[in-house]
Image: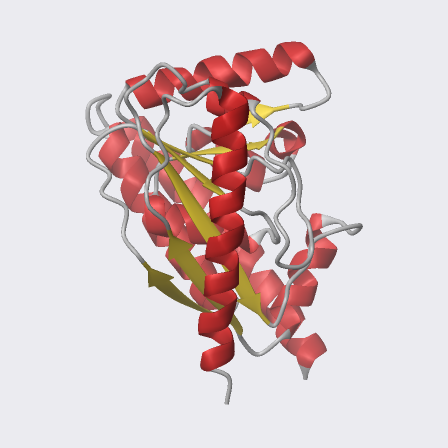
Amino acid sequence: MSRVRAVLRTGAFVGLSAVTLTAYETQRALSSTNAQPDLLARYRDRFTNTVLRLFGTEVSVRGEAQLDGGALVVANHQSALDIGVMLSVFRGVLVSRHDVAEWPLLGRLAKHGDTIFVDREDRRSGVAALREIRRRVKEQRVVVAFPEGGTFPGDSVHEFHPGTFAAVGSLAAPIIPVGLAYSPAVPYNKESFSQHMSKVASRPATRIAVNVGEPIPSRLDPRSAAEAARTEVESLVLQARAVLNAREP
């Protein structure tokens, strides 16, 4: 049954991606420049929420960020589902690894979503990404990043790279820490994206707790901000895990 479920959900995901991309590009071509941001927001919300339902996720959110302007939202990174969850809760612009831009369907969707792509092994790419993060926040937009620089199993939060925080260091913009916990766990480690999503698709449901913390001052130097955010995110993850454990049957 789990294999059939995985095949059906994966096929539906591919179909949804193709239909969404075609419909969005068609309507975008017919829309004025001023109307395109609202069009993108509608399609983004519809797509991310449908994907989360399709894969049987049950998302609960604790806490609320007061996002009245530009902000940097940082979270731990365990699964490809993190992307849909964070965009569903915070919307905004995502920071993603550079190779995603070349993926079929999803790469084009990510580009339309104004995603900031970064190759962490390339210094010039990193510098360009930091400039883009700063520009978007100055434009009063929300940027969502995973400063661990990769996905890691378990609830331990690995070191946060300070570069992301350097991008907003001199701006009066909040840094919002977020902790994510999954039940059952969905580690995304040494496997391809398709293998990971097939594994997630095979399970009946995945419960996700999103724990939003209090803002961290952006006036801290990048290393101090990175460590303060990592410490807070790890605490938020443990609290999110406690919430999931309390709801276990």
